Length: 168
Image (cartoon, rainbow, N blue to C red; front, side, top):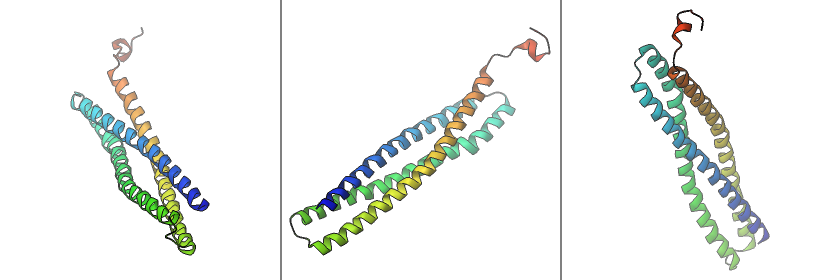
């Protein structure tokens, strides 16, 4: 029973940590969508066709790609979460049978080894997703900063004397 209790603790911790990670993914995905929408709206009002083309190229190849990657990670998570919740329920039912003495020791050890493999496989998936996510999030944050910097530069009032080569 100690091994089952230890497993249950590790399973719960993994689930909690994975959910915290997923909450961060969701928040970042929502922010990415919001930034892409803001960029689309800003570009729609641009008059300078050269700048509009430049921004559209950057926006289409980076921001939208980042957003699609975020959504892909989120969709993968939601499918995983459904399986995780189902397995958590199944584990609780199995544990109850073990506690009532309805499962012999040999079968309990075999089943616990199977549960441990499921946990280890899930932990490996979450780690893989987190590694991918971390790189994608960093790229997205860099693209958002570059876009914000470009918008700030475009919106800054121009000093006509400097543009004409004069001194202030």
